[in-house]
Length: 204
Image (cartoon, helix red, strand yellow):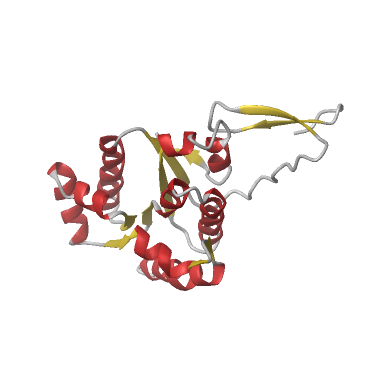
C-alpha cells in the first residue's frame, strides 16, 4: 500500500517481514489473484521435518480417498520409504499415487533455463488433469521450485509458482511446495516474502 507521502509499505501476509520503500523508481508487485484451491508453502530446517510433512500429506490422501501426486528428488522418495512413512506411501501406491522425478520433470518444460508455459501445460498440466479426471480430490507436492531456487534461478522458481497458480484456476487440486530455509535465506530478507506472494498459506 502507499501513503500520502508517496511511500510504499510492503507487508508479507505470512512471514514476519515488512519493508518501506520510496515510490521513485521502485516497482511494486501487484498481488496475485487468490487461487481457488489451497497452495501452501513450507520452509523447512531439516530433512526429518520435511519427510514428516510429506508423510502426513500422503496419509491425509489415503484417509480422504484422494489421489496423491508427488514430484520429488530421489533422496526424498527414498526417505519416504523408510519406517512409517514407507508403509504409508506403500498403501497410497496401491491406491491412487503418482510419483515423478523433480529434476527429470523440470527438464521437460524448461527452455533456456526458464519455465515455458506451453511446455508446462503439455507435461505437468497433462498429468494433473489426468489425475483429477478420476473424480477424486488431488493432493500434490512439488519441489521443482526448490531445485531452481537452490541453483540461484530465483526468477525461474517464481515463474514456475505462477504457472502452478494458473493451473489451479483451471483444475481443482491442493498443492504443497517446500523450500529449505537455508537456500531461501541466502537470497536475503526478502526471499520468503517473494515466495509467500505466490501462496495462499504457510504449511503448519
